[in-house]
Image (cartoon, rainbow, N blue to C red; front, side, top):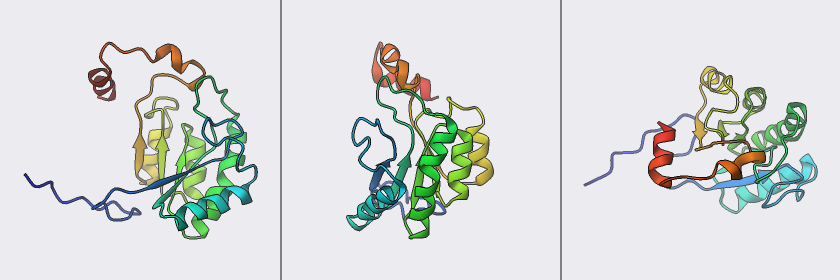
Length: 169
């Protein structure tokens, strides 16, 4: 059986192949690369390097979601994310913003982010989904039960795949 033709999404490359997303964490405490890009210039250069290496999308995040992480103030997340999004977009990169906050999403989209990547599935901030809808930009949602600080306590499933499917509905 042949798969249906992929549907075009404004602002994204053709969806007839898997897209590669490079990640730029502008946080001091992410589990994978926290603190490696201490300032906006370093983060932008890393993002552009990811594009040169083949990334279709550069995802910029300013809040660590590692287990036990403390949430930064919204003003701090904005300070971390917005200049990097602005410069990457100005350089021609296709940028997404990884945030659970509506104000950060709005500021990032206004600064050039093509879409929003919300690891909370829209649950952390009830204003995020309306902001993204108003901006008419694509949205990536993840399955989520709790903020990083308490995620380990909630990561218990009877049967993980059916449980996640049920919660995503």
